[in-house]
Length: 146
Image 1 (cartoon, rainbow, N blue to C red):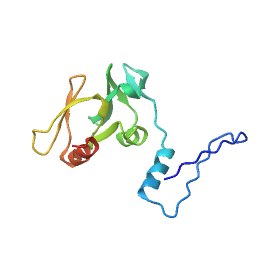
Image 2 (cartoon, one colour; image 1 turned 60 degrees about the vertical axis):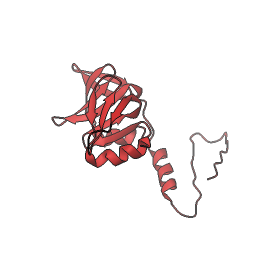
Image 3 (cartoon, rainbow, N blue to C red; image 1 turned 135 degrees about the horizontal axis):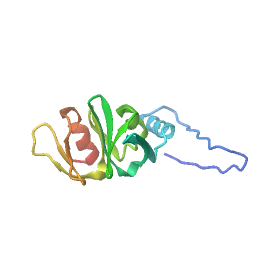
Image 4 (tube, one colour; image 1 turned 135 degrees about the vertical axis):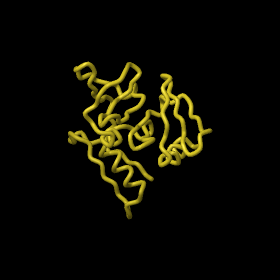
């Protein structure tokens, strides 16, 4: 792949042009990454107040009792966003879905217990644990190179 950058003082906004003979998976992924800007902050509700949360402090995002909860280093927050929305805005190199009801921050994982048959026990740096669903085990292993 060739990458070319041209500086043009008359341009006010960046313009990206992809020149290719066929749209491959790689091209589609590049387009998708350009469309979705990675967010640095999200919002959560705690004690009736909306708080700004730095994405780096997210441990896990999960659904419970038809609500989406955000667990961070500093506590737990309620979110108005849905899991699929988080999946779209968060960096796919750091955040991965491990079940239909949970997304985890790979940078906050302390260890993985692979001894259970058909699932993985995920232990976080804050002491919490969760489990992957059988459906997502292969995906998590592939991402982690296991």
